[in-house]
Image (cartoon, rainbow, N blue to C red; front, side):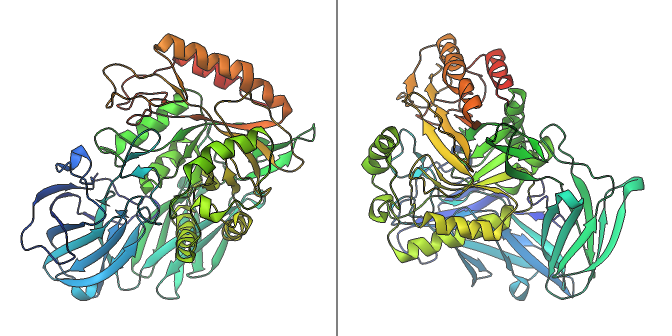
Length: 560
């Protein structure tokens, strides 16, 4: 992808390093004397579009190599950015190790100025354990099948280089103060200095002179709110000494309040807002976790909007910044999951026993960490660090309205303490602390997953009732499947049968629960993925498997 990878902080200098690299897979961590061939970055070697189509095992090392040239300018810095490298990356510039990064889903950067020349070589050594260690892995598996998918390794998001002044903007933090019609802007630079912030265009343009590394509060005249119906984004230009960047922010507020019948509901910009969404796991047939182009992002988001959904739950995956940018500009609310990991949970406990607990209304306080897969101290500390990094990286995106900390007990531990950490970092968003089961009575939602039992909503005094996964109805459409085996919660043989079942489920069980307090519904899922054929769309996105008019009609009935 050649689009600017980070729309929240854009400069004129941008050199994409995506494209053809050399690769090698070795048994030892020594640099290979000879490379195996070419690989197309940012596609993982397991993805067909990489040109490699080969699995990397936990006992192997994946090497990358690329040459690039720059015109060195005295007094400038060169910053090398990686969108994501799964799972542990060692970065070398001109044969010198300059960075080690752990975490396969979070971006990282390194100032390579001390080592850069006119002609340069960047090399990356990758170690990827997939699901055989405690590191974050999402839905990746060494033995894919059912609800778990092909594991990936190495570089799977864009690599790019930018030239910046010696003193430059490192980060921007936007926090709307909605009810006061003001925006708080913090510009983090490597020096304390004045900053010039220009907001908006034309007659409503605002110029504000503030300081770096501190909070600057700016009043917004004639404030325009951001919502799915009107996703207004304020353009921003910020100047910090010789550095100039373009950015954007939005004015919106998300909270829980009680309605006229004393039922806790979700409110957006002080108005009740029913959240109707889909699970989106971000897999594509040819690129796996990496889309073929920016258009793949736009198509998925717009398709869901056209079907009447106003929210997407990004399920145990972090997308490139451009996906969130398109949600921001198109008007799609996002529930963002943290990435699961851990030493390996016990499926019998977090699936069958957990379902039994839900059915019998047994509340299990602090589920055993030996069974949820998060007993070791280093596994806990790694999760906390990556949870904080996730919030920091995505904090500015107005589309994100909720953080989901744990899903169905995967790696769950010290749930209320984790909730306190998230709340302290970001008080502007809602929290689903335990999606599905092992609820610890915290966060903003009583979060329910329901695939098999009659749906019953129990209203709570201060938390919103949320059906955060349901449906999962499966139809494997001939000519649009990649696996012969089919996985889903109920299997149907035709589009007509699937449509009838979907409509019946919505009208018989889901919609009647709204008057009892239901305020959030999230259907499983946006598209088929490998064996899991329970998507609204096929894996290749070519066929809509449920009749459009039925989905629209049901979504129109999801309201207070």
